[in-house]
Length: 440
Image (cartoon, rainbow, N blue to C red; front, side, top):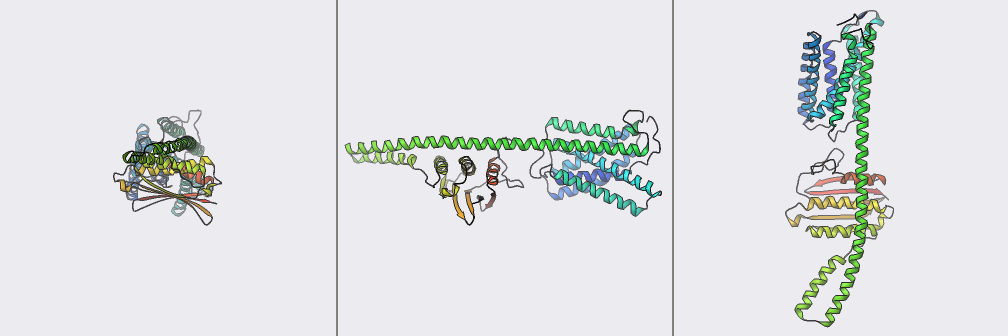
């Protein structure tokens, strides 16, 4: 160590540093998405506290090079608490550990700086009650504020998926922050070091706070970018559904004209030839044509196109699709929203139902009706598989490319919210029921 600190303050007690590191881990275990049972999280955290205390006392007995090793061991202990206590991935755990480490350093430094200030103000050593009261107050306020702040910065329903570059940047920020905040304890002969005891702790607390603020801003920016990408994906899906509706409408008009012409041609042929077996063949032809000429008539032309198209898709997959809909209730909804809402809902039902082996179970029911001051849209389908949803009720996609899929229910929620509505999902006795309530 080079240089001497004037009026050097006592070092932070090792037990205080360990408690701060442990509480920082608890904060992030509470705010991020947990994939293991609560009991396992509790056991891991309970074992983690004495382990961190032991590591800190071990680091305190070492010389400077080994002290740095001890701090890395403490960080490794925090990493294991987060990894085992939440079931997070390795990269995600490293990303969270870097943030937790700076939070623990910040609170430990702030608490000890305040404790030394109180001792200097009282002009005497505070008694045990005063020391414990200050410790509890500072820790409670700081970690509750940290929990409140970070709770809105992480999702409890989806894993945190930092990129490699984001993780590297976070770890680098943590290392730089830790190095700069402790530089004065290594050498006072640098442009960034302090020489007075209280000044050294002020620098340490301020640098740790800046580091935590940088990491907070980084995560907030990452969340904002992810939200914008998700919104862009939903909007792209909305446009795709609308384009599908326009194409379906054009196809239906063409098929309708074709069916009308064929009916006249069949009638003319029947007038000329009428053997029994030929007549039977013409009846089969007429029935086939009738399949394509049949259209839904709900009272809303956009919904008619969607229901007619989906009815034929269901027929192609051997799915029994029944729809009872009062389309006039949708008069105040845009054609794009109608196409996207009903298209997504029915497509999700078709995707789930088409996987069933038993044709008798391939059932989809749709109802659109008014109830009181609400428009009720209900889509039900039979399923025979394991469904996974997050805390917000969004279905987790079964496709490998999770980033590009799984927006069906989110898109429906997005549309419902535009009309001050809400979406509920219920599963009962192998029936999946999606209900959308929209105020009239």
